[in-house]
Image 1 (cartoon, rainbow, N blue to C red):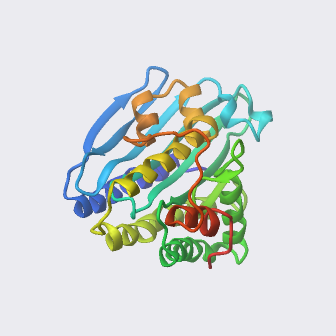
Image 2 (cartoon, rainbow, N blue to C red):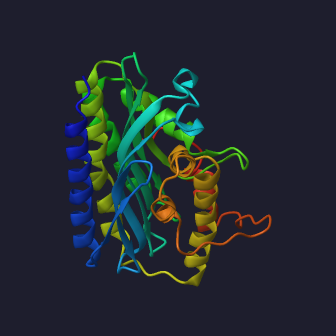
Image 3 (cartoon, rainbow, N blue to C red):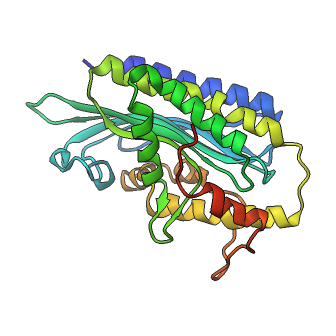
Length: 299
């Protein structure tokens, strides 16, 4: 039996804990924006803009219901089309101002699909990934090692499976290019019983602060100039492309009539595109493409 009260209590507590830690890092309070949804449910959006460290950051909780699962939620489960649904989760995106600090994304979520006369179908999903602009090997190894340590209790092969899944998922097919250096990603998780699946999801959510915050602390005072900011804005364009074209969470939110302001809080505040631009060979910008974006085993 799925315990929706326990799931909601965990997700709201996770949002609060992460916001508290990020406010301590930035020194700027997050704005709290509660909302309700006409079709059922609502959420709490926590947003920071123009902070001392984060140019924009959002940590969202949502708990929504509807009469029919949208296409983005049934892409891998077509037999569930037409069922009513309940979905809840925490989703965050953090865009630091300093280009030497990476962007990060994390999401943990639960879905329940129901229809009269049948047992509800539930599953968990989530993950986290890192998108650096001027990357450091130690940072990337720390991020991946923290992900691996969180998942090791659930099986020797789980991290490798979810790491590879993340590499496939956060790939811009139209550019044949990774969005960043990956992390872990999983979806449709309902094997092994509710307790195991919920515990694994909690392990991912609880690992985020330890995986990410030390990387920001290491580099937030590094000097940078307009060149670094320019490249950061260019690479942020890839982030926008992925979120608007491929991201299942964004598509689910828009298709289910979600709150647009909360869904699109993941967009970076400053971004640009150039026509057919390529970094100069041997440059720091080229190093991102040559040494970090191709998937590799970091741990």
